[in-house]
Image (cartoon, rainbow, N blue to C red):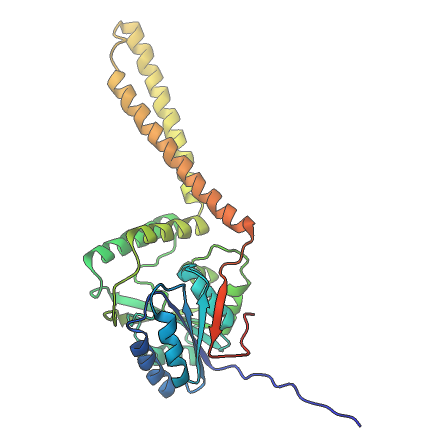
Length: 324
């Protein structure tokens, strides 16, 4: 007897939502309610992946309680905190949608913008639909100052203009597959999507207040992100060190001429103040240069170790989903 069976191929949802979450227990339920209310109206074929980046509060426990209420809700938990970039990568690896939207769980990326982003993508308006902040009134003055400093450094040192940019963006499946094919371990999602060069459309949005809690980003974390982004996308800092070295050679030549003049004129005692200033300046510059070289070496070190970007401790909401 000949028997045949057709393999069941899961149908891709139209849209996958990837939500990195860190210590978002207080507002998670409200966020999911708002999100699914929008998705049920504009994208009946969808799935949502919440990636718990090693939260220290009850984020994972609260997500477990929400799973039974949403058939298309999935959850993934890291073994520890690996960072937002790793959480986004994990979500992209699990997402099956023909398009993927990345958004935060704190409510500042409004779900109400999703229909506009989908409409733009559906008519071929862009393979990437990036949500751009119309203003940052919901942020504190300190947060706005940090953002301006970060964006200024990125523009000056990498050529990437990220003013008003956010991680809230829609990616066509082709873009997602391209990002997943990148071999590097150290990633900067926002810059990588710009670097790909795929057709990009932008939609403006008002940054909403957080549903609950406070921002988890500190100045130190933003500084680390800036160092990672700059060293990953530009060698300009190395060129700046080279130019500083040339400047030091010119200054040394001038000081040599000044020393010769002082010796010939019999006033060799003069010039000690200027010499001290120059020595201190270039001594500090040398330390700065070593620090910049160290940042690049740290990137290389992270890459050559070959460790995984993250470790998954638990997956809920789906028995058959596996990372690609």
